[in-house]
Length: 435
Image (cartoon, rainbow, N blue to C red; front, side, top):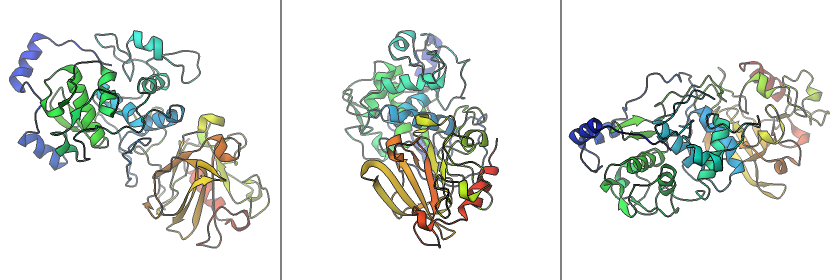
C-alpha cells in the first residue's frame, strides 16, 4: 500500500492542471482511449513474436495481458487461496507500481510510509501477513515469491465477486460514468480500496470522486480491471497508458516464458512445447516423469510397451506438488474438439482433445482450470489450462499427460491407439527450448 507525501507546490500544480473532481472522460481523453495509441514506457523489453492470444475476464482466471513473469507467479500461487480472485492480486500490483515492475528479489524502493516490495507492504501489515513462499527460511516483502502470498491473504473473500455491484455492464468507458463504489467487500473495487486504505467515498460514482490517494487508487484499479489489463489510467499524470507494456517488467529475469503472458514459444513450423517454463533445465530431468528427450520410444511413458509408451508425462523442476498450477499450452493451432469437466469422476479435474491443424487429436490429461471451451479455436502456444492437483493424476506427482491418437482423426488418450509420431515431435520441441 503506497503512502506518499505531496508538497504544496505539487497540489498547486494539480489544482491548476486538473479539476477538483475526476469527471467523465474529456474529449481528448476519449480520443486517446478510442485511438488505441497510449503512452508507454520505452524501457519495456518484450520484443518476442508469439501467437495471438485470447483473454479471460472472470474470477479464477487472469488475462494474458499480464506479463508472463508476474502472471505465472500469481497463477502458481492461486491454488493455495481458492477464496481469492487472482485478478485483484495482479491489479494492485499494477496500481502500486503504476505499471508492471521489473521482477527482482531486492532493491525495491521504500515509500515515505515505509512500504516495501512489489506489493508495497508496510511493516505492521507484513507482521501479520508475511509468508515464506519459497521455503528459504525467510519472510521477505521484497521477494516476489513471499510477497505474493501476503497479497493473496489481503484479498481473502474476493473470489466470485464482480468488479462492481452497481452501474457495471462490462463496457469500460461507458461504465466509468455509472459505476458506484460500495465498500462492503461485495466487489473487487472495494478490495482495491481496502488494500490501499481509506478515503474513497462509499456509495459515490467514480466520476464524482474528489481527488485523494485512495480515490485515485480505486479509479486506477477500475480501468485495469474493466479493460482486462489492456488499458490503464495513471492518476498521477491523468493519462491513459497501454497496460500491457507500461512499467519495467523484465521478461529475462525469472520469467517462465520468453513470450508475452499466457503464451509459449512457437517453433517455425507452428508447434509449441506444451508445459511452462519451456526451459530444458526446468522441464527436463524431473523424477518419475518422461525422459526429455526420449531416446527410446518404448521408455517415453511408464507403460513401456508400444503403442502405450508413445506418450509423455511432462512436469517441471523440482517436481511434486509445487508443479500444481503450471501453465499448459496448446501444442499447435487447432480446435478444442472435446472437453470433459471431470476425470475418473473427480469434478474439477479435466481433460480435453485438441484437434490440431496437422489432423491429429492430442489428449491433454490431469489438468485443471481449462480456459477454453469446446469447439473453440486455439493458437499454438496459447495457455489453455494448468497442471492439476495430485488427485487429478491418479495420485501420482502432478504433471501433464499428452499423447495423440492414431490414425489421424482418432481421439488421443487410449493406450491402444497412440501415435508414435509424437515422440520425435516432443523431442524436437524440447531440444529447441532455451537452456
